Image (cartoon, rainbow, N blue to C red):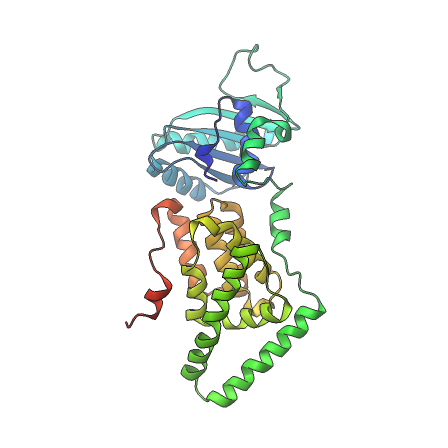
Amino acid sequence: MNPNTLRLRSPADVVCAIPYLVGFHPSDSVVVLACDGTAGACAVRLDLTAADELLEHVAGLIARRGPDGVILAGYGPPGRVTPMVERVRDRLHDQGVRVRDALRVEDGRFWSYLCTDTGCCPPEGTFVDVTASPVAAAAIAGGLVALPDRGELERMLAPAGGPAARAATVRAEQRLKGWAEFERGAERVAARMAREGVPLVRDVIDRACADGRMPGDEETAWLGLLLAGTRVRDEAWVRMTEPHLRTHMMLWRHVLTRVAEPYAAAPASLLSFAAWRAGEGALANIALDRALSADPAYSMALLLRELFLSGLPPSSVPLNLTPDDLDAPA
């Protein structure tokens, strides 16, 4: 669900929407909500301790989106939030971006830095029940979730494989080792990985899209090893179609949390891309961190990092390749 499909008519609506737009209930943060503009709406979360260089980078990205204006929402006590809100507002002003409103949110209440009408914005703040609002209901109906905090997103991607998964990985490694001894040559091994891995990827994705079935321990371990082959990984990448993005997120999260760490870069990168295309920026970044932690030089993860830093909206980066293109002669 794209943020600009939520109708936000008041500061209370903004406060209710933000947890669903960033994927979790923020704390010790400032969220910049860019409204409309040529590239649509977007929400960017910054830590209260964010460096000036990052603020300038984010302000520049938002300015290039051409928003009609932005709304700032700082989460935490005034002594920590107010200076950060002022820093962000100044950087946006330098870029010619209009700040429509600036809010502070704490303990279920919000205050506006710009509204001086005590009838509208009382000194004790305005109470808002985020979970019971119509905006929250609309967000949930659109497939958005708001986890308790960012740490919960990280825990969702933490390794979850038990003894059965580890044993399956050992068997998969032994199987691949047998290939290497038989095929004798990296190119021949890679070709065999593609021959077996591409049909497996197609089958796993088709099953997931048809009825949500996830692969078991043996299949997941074997898939994790075969994804080390670029051709196999790219088959999964080009099959990410818009109607099934959330199924791809579910599938690659399932694989990521069950494979051994040396094989995590590929499923983490696939999850990151699917989440980004689905508008789940926080999940995309956390999955990207997992990929780079597993392999700091992993090519797909490095490409995604540059893509995310560019600030380009997902709609501007269509994935035009097809599986047939991958098999076409160079």
